[in-house]
Amino acid sequence: GAVVSQHPSRVICKSGTSVKIECRSLDFQATTMFWYRQFPKQSLMLMATSNEGSKATYEQGVEKDKFLINHASLTLSTLTVTSAHPEDSSFYICSARPGEVGYTFGSGTRLTVV
Amino acid sequence: QKEVEQDPGPLSVPEGAIVSLNCTYSNSAFQYFMWYRQYSRKGPELLMYTYSSGNKEDGRFTAQVDKSSKYISLFIRDSQPSDSATYLCAGHSGGYQKVTFGIGTKLQVIP
Image 1 (tube, rainbow over the protein chains, first blue to last red):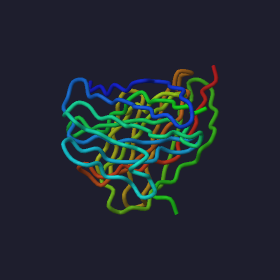
Image 2 (cartoon, rainbow over the protein chains, first blue to last red; image 1 turned 180 degrees about the vertical axis):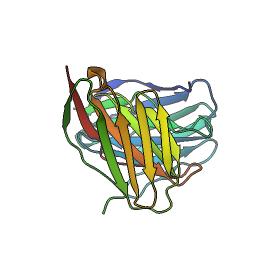
Image 3 (cartoon, rainbow over the protein chains, first blue to last red; image 1 turned 60 degrees about the horizontal axis):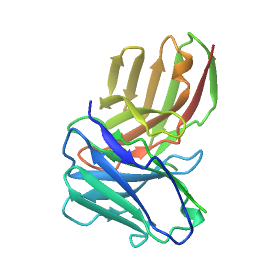
C-alpha cells in the first residue's frame, strides 16, 4: 500500500530555535500534501495544504510566517516551525492522497519545545 | 456545532464482543467518509473509505453510512485486545477538499 514517511518521529528543541519536519510519499507522487496538528485528547486540526511548486494554503488562525511549508518536489513536503515556543509543542502529522482512495498519514512528529 | 461529532468515550468491551462506533456530521456536502485507527503517539491508519450511503465490509470491520440522517458507523466483530486504540471518523466532499475529523473514540478491548 501507499506509504507516507515522516521524520523525525520525536524532536526536542530549545525555545527560539527552528525545527524542520519532513514528509515523503514513498511509492506515489503527491502534488498535494496536508499538515495537521493534534493536541492531547483533541482531533486532528488541518494547519495547511501544501502544493507542489506553489505556495501553501493556510487555515484560518495558522501563522504562515511561523509554520513555513515547502513542497519542492512531487514526493517531499517540509514543515519548519520557526522560533519555536513551548506552546508549539504538539503532535504534527502529514498526509497525502495516493489516488482515489482515502488519505494516508505519516507516523507523526512529537515536538517538545523546552 | 462541530462538523463531525463523535463521543470520545472511553468505551470498554470484553474480548470477542461486537463494537459499535458512531459519528454524526452536519456538512451536507460530504460525500466520502473514512474511519481511521490511531494508536498512541502514532499517525492514523486508514481502516475504511466509503462513498455516499451504504455498507462496506472488510474482514472484521463494517462501515455504514446513512446520508439521510447524517450518521456513520463502524462495527468491529470479534474484537481483539489489539483493537484497543482511538478510532477517528472523518468526512470530505471529494477531490482534495479539506477532511474534517471527529475527536475520536477511545476503545479498550479487555482480554
